[in-house]
Structures are given as structure tokens and as C-alpha cells.
Amino acid sequence: MSLAYRLWSWAIFTEEEEVQLAEDRKYCAARFVWRRRSLRTPNKRVTWEAWWERMFGENYKNYVRAMIEKNEA
Image (cartoon, rainbow, N blue to C red; front, side, top):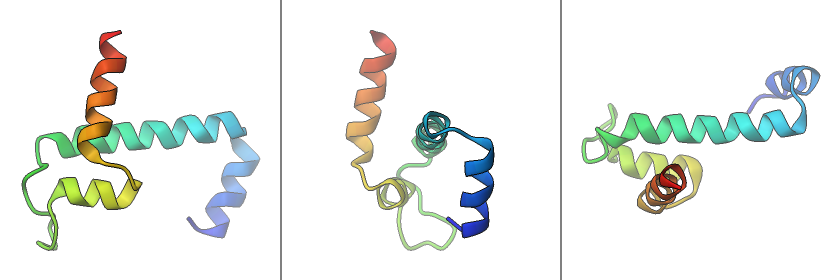
């Protein structure tokens, strides 16, 4: 994240809002990847699932399972 973005976001968002935005970004990315998870990214090096795991540092399948359980409850 660039310094300019961090300074801008600190001026506009509270810490709680920043956390919520990060969670929303992660959730939206997971939804985007779901139908493409076994396909390769445009650079053809990794699958979308591997891209998500590298981007967010978490196992994709475990995250999806946790979100399904959370939404069912």
C-alpha cells in the first residue's frame, strides 16, 4: 500500500472501518475466485485459488468453509 493511500485512508477512515474494509476486500476477492479457482490467472503462472492464498496468506478452502459456516449460523 502506498504512503499516499495510507495517509488518505487515515484521514477518512477509523481503525474499525479499515479493518472492515480489509475483510470486505478479502470476502469479495474470495467470491470472485470461487468460479475461477481451478483456472489460471492471466499471467498463466498460478491458479486463482493459489493467487488468493498468496494475496491474503490464508488457505482458501478453509476461509470459504468458515464463511459458509458463518453465513449459515
